[in-house]
Image 1 (tube, rainbow, N blue to C red):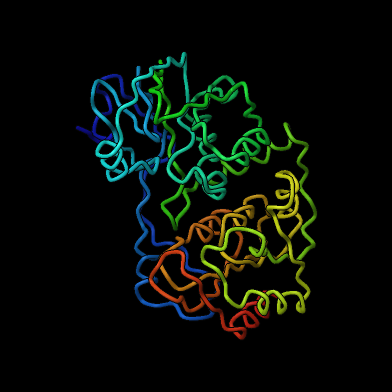
Image 2: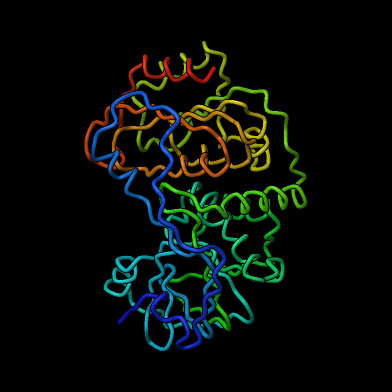
Length: 354
């Protein structure tokens, strides 16, 4: 059986510390749109109005296993605020055998990662910002332990190290082989709904910048560069078929092509800090704009389909970074299908950003 955490506050050692109340607001529209914006895509964007109350769940003697499955006294729990949805829980209960090996984790431990933990952008936008919720809930984030899956990518550990979450503060576990019994499990939420970002997201960015400065020597750069974020050296899901043509147009307009995945983490942050205009295919690396200054102009290029969502616009709205959109025709309804962008749409976007 399973239930939702929010329905069990006050029961069985489950408590919740509210940091920011829920809200219902129509998302801020893109600063500009060039290319086809079909009605179903517009509906998906503007219907993301609701943001739940944000805070930290505390669960005494909780068990963690099977890819972020939280159980207590025989009941499994979903937590939509942390993107752990009922379908995710039910899927794990249906197809995954319960681990027989049990390990004890002492003290206060944070379930930091969650679904999507193998994707770089989820670490930037979903997981690292959780630190501010913990701090605002009254916890000393430097005295906590952080639970992450043993198969977390190397970039996850580098990002954590960049903001002062070093290896000795991390508890790795293999959820398919062992069950982690935690004295007090802390479950902070993600700070967005896929389109809107919570107001506290700005505080989260300020905290990450402060910690990157303290632990990694990060220094804000003067925003003077125009950069185009290329995906030509990374995953080719959602492939832009006429990428070479579009990148040539950007270069002819004075944009410098950058390949974030070839840089050290702190250098990626500094590069985006140095930009006054950022254009690129929608993807994880664009979310480094969190480190860019207010007023930085941003343009994302993507196919006209539901995936990915539009959190880049939520980031831009909260951080005062005007964010525009160029849409291209998608080849199919497949979420990872390739797409084609009309060159005039990109030319028009670059013109209005001048």
